[in-house]
Image (tube, rainbow, N blue to C red; front, side):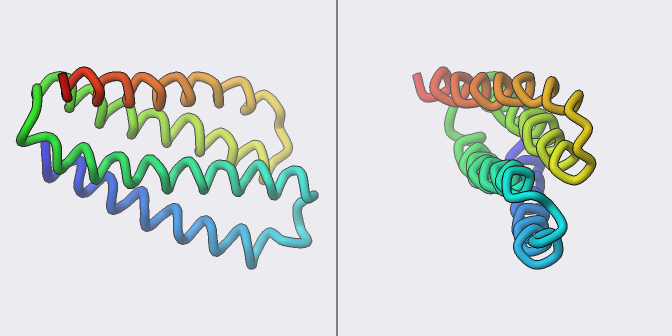
Length: 120
């Protein structure tokens, strides 16, 4: 599990930096300020949770394996659904993608709960 979540965190961090640069340089002027803010929110939460995945990789060898594994997979799912839906919403303007965002948010919250359970 440690290597899986280390890899997932590194990839999520890489993509977060790339998307952040793309948003700052490629989308400024092409998106409305509101949609650019939505895109930036996706990047910010992706980066926070890329770091959470790295923490999960570190904790994986030291705490309850099931809770840590659940936390890691919930972070991966949450990044994909939360940040991914915000990216698509910002770039396309298709508001139905906004309905997916809360599901990703719940996955991210559940990941933090699982990490806390692992600590107990």
